[in-house]
Length: 166
Image (cartoon, rainbow, N blue to C red; front, side, top):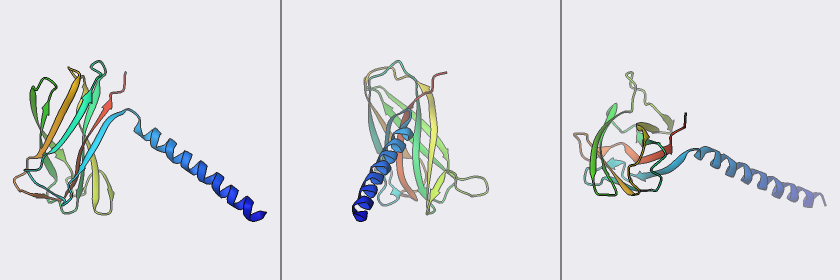
């Protein structure tokens, strides 16, 4: 009888733990509309392997904030990273941007949150953007550093959030 009650309590508590995890995950998503990260399997980002992300936009009224996600390791030798971003609009119009992302402080310490030898950063590169047309947008990211392949880059991605209304 005691064993059955213990098993029932354990099963019951597993349900609460599962519910708590689901609520935690849902609460973390907030205003996120899109987020996708591409793993650089070799941790050496090659110029010939751009990160290409496609996003379908239907809302042309709301404003969005756009971020570049990046994970680097201790193998990365520089304090910043240049990225060339090419955005292709649904009407095939192309826009190019150069992003200068600061990964380390002046004293050499990595910025962002770290786990082991990996550091995660999220860089806001455009805020309160309104997409001009409905359809598929393509974002292509290529590193703009002078060394190729570029060691120490583990993941590159894009996050799009609805801007907070004020």
